[in-house]
Image (cartoon, rainbow, N blue to C red; front, side, top):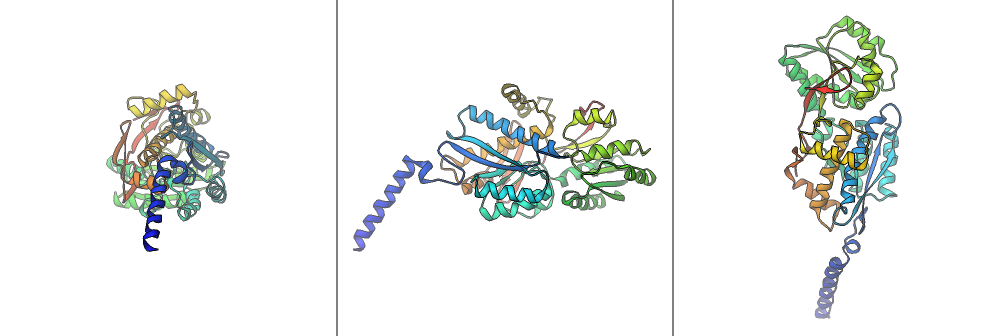
Length: 386
């Protein structure tokens, strides 16, 4: 009986191997993966005052998906992006994430926007074992509190703030005020800014919260005019940035303004609405200029925009395009028998990689992706200069 059992077990094992080779999509089925499709989920802000971030990020991600799908997909599978609007509200992000995981059965998640929204989504992704790839979030805590399911591409806000603070210190500016978004994003990065300022012997003379839905910043502008800091660092995102710049510029305050990469999304639109007041704003940038194709990644992005008729053209759209390219590379590396665990392992084995000369680094202990940060200044018409 023992010999017969072993023979039957061996025969079953060989049958399973044959079935895996003949019908890999069936035998090795992973959630969100079929013989023809890989389904990726996204919850992001597509309405309200911060909608430009989600709209542009999705446009960039979808643009490279279109390129890959036109070429036959990844190992014969087309990429499908399922997106839901969370209107920047963490509770809706959590509900959307649950739907993407439980009902849409996505393979992985990508393209999320904002710190509080990622806070709401990550426990669900981690519990379900679903990879969360490249949220548009640079908050330091997500990088120091390691989660194997979470991968970043963009540089962290700590690196952006370090670039700003070190620059101010280098040019002899020793005092700053910080205007921060009254949210998890603003408060956590205010703490990072204060720590870095102490490191560089730059005094934080004033910190002022501002609501993301604010339509008036006159009181803040007047307060800053009295304090007269050497510079103002803005930790905010979306249209509130325009509200602050508008009222600050008319308050009589003259200190230079610095913002994180998420401060301005629609630069040309902001320039028109601010009627020249955008000029002189210094921003941290975590991708190269999307209108300057000297890097191959930007040239590829502009080529695909032209081919697929994508009208959106912004730093956030380029970031989404880069994110999509790294995501697809990880899927390719995981092979035909695609699993979530295989995808994570493939990313961790990537090491030092370059995507059209844009550098990204992953390992089993480092999921932080890129360290690229530069400083640029807005001109009157919304273009940027180094």
